[in-house]
Image (cartoon, one colour):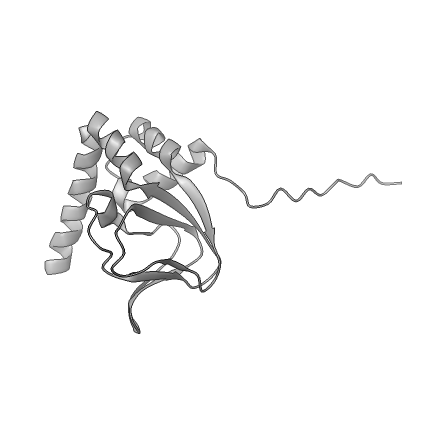
Amino acid sequence: MPRQAAVLNLGPRVLTTVEKVLFLKSIDLFSQIPGEDLAQIALISTEEDRDQGEEIFSEGESGDALYMVIDGKVRVHKADRVIAELGERECFGEMAILDAGPRSATVTSISDSNLLKITREDFQEIMSEKPEIAQGIIKVLLRRLRDAIR
């Protein structure tokens, strides 16, 4: 009689620290940061699963975290006007890791999504120890700003 493998339901798959580092390296915002510094960032990041239709944050709320899409899709919108739809390896809420200002838009999951979240408080602690991380982030944000005004 053939032996059958037991099927275990271990719940959602969780990324290892190494997988998080590789994922972060593939995100434009973190592309200028060396791998050893990305390891520190990976350690402060947490995964969040969001259901289709679930609001991640609302316009006007105080920003407290950056999110990256591991898989799934999210919609960035102001009321009924869609600003962007973002998918795998794209990030949103990046201003919140540098500034506690209000969110400029609402973000809603448009499919079941797995996100990586980094809080401002944790990120600022790392930036105070390693200013080159902040410099890498600022370079990317400045490049985005230049591209947007061209």
